[in-house]
Image (cartoon, rainbow over all chains, first blue to last red; front, side, top):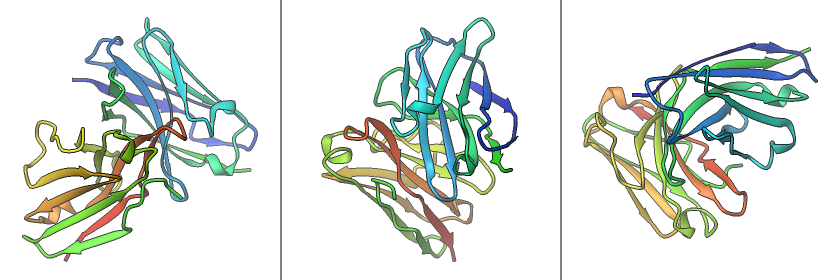
Length: 119
Length: 111
């Protein structure tokens, strides 16, 4: 059973870079898409993007210009960077896993990291 | 504003049946993309409740059921229990947005 543990800075100033990492245990990296989702009071749940074991990424077009998702299979972890953050990026950020098939759900979620952007 | 529309809240007495609708369009649910449902208890991460329109993951009670028709999907809770008080979200894929999309969520209150 996949388990996800996430970590990263929780307080940022406007224009800084959000950086979060999600550690994976209990599963091989291949066979899944590794996903980032955020949740804010104003926007609800928002899919940010995902990455597979070979580094192929998919991004939400609304965030694509500011987002980078990477993977380190040697460390069993994947990471999110969101550049030039503003107050609108304040949210709880979740990592999640999705089986490789496109139609599959996000079936395992991390506990979430609260990120606040404030000057 | 989400492309998947859910009622903000529904309520029912213990033992009753409640349903939550998720209305989309021809670029998401109506295009044939499957719908998944998630349950979020206060202060926790969302948990998968229904996948592929109507399938329950192992461990999910059979009082939860999902269906899909046309551009809409529904989640039914039959025999409402106090522990079902939570937020429920539908999720699908939108071909116009080229993005996975979520409903805004429905708060279920057990009276």
